[in-house]
Structure formats: C-alpha cells, structure tokens
Length: 169
Image (cartoon, rainbow, N blue to C red; front, side, top):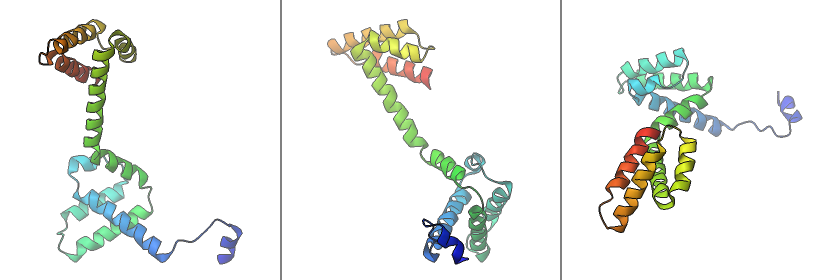
C-alpha cells in the first residue's frame, strides 16, 4: 500500500493527531447543530440521516453517556458528507448581525455621498436602482444641505436615510 503513495510525490498521509483534530472539529460542528433552534436548523442543508441524528441528540439528556455517543455518531456521519454547505449556512446565520451592520454603513455612506455630491451621485444611484425616485432624492438632498447650512437638526438627512433603507432593503 505504501508503494502506491510513493508514486505521488506530493502525497503525505495525515498523522493520527490531524485525523483526531478533524474528528473533534466535526463533532463541535455537530454540537452547534444540536444547540441551534428549530427554525435555524431548518435553514441548514444536510442529509436526512444526519438531520435525524441531530434531532435524536436534541432529545437525549445531555448528562448521559448516550448523548456523547450520539455526538460521536454525528461526527462520523459528517466525515462521509460534504460539510462545506453546512459551514457556509452556519456562517451566514452567525454573521447575520455583521451583514446588517455592513448594510447600514453602506446606506449611511450612500446618503452622505448624495448630500455632498448631489446630482452626479443621484444619477448613478437611480441607474443602479430604478425603483428610486430621482425627484425625491434631489429634494431631500437640497433640504439636507439647507439644514446643514442653517445649523438645524438633520431631519431631511434622516428622511433620506429612511427612504434609501426602505427602498433598497
């Protein structure tokens, strides 16, 4: 058997420690699946057998030996399946807040650009998002600039942000 490996110069068999670490990592992924709520679990793409094993682990008392064995079974099942879609779905669920913050900052930057640069940016935004009303954007931009010059509260700037948020999300 080692003769086959000698033919491939780049092939290095994994060490026992690497294999154990991968198994523990898959078990931890299984624990995350078991700990998830039902709604979030339904969004994770996985084989029906794996889903059944996760559901069984949720019903087992965590202080019993059976729970540990069930987690090992889940880890074993995951070794034979493609776990990348599961990891990606978990990543999306876990980073939902970061994505919302990123979207919020993008809208703030867009609003600031519209107020600062006016018609040039408005034309670009309307070209990218035809659902937006050019006249409303221009009106809110002019009002925001007037408020800024008069040192008034940024009411129109807030309205512009809320309009963008409502239309673009």
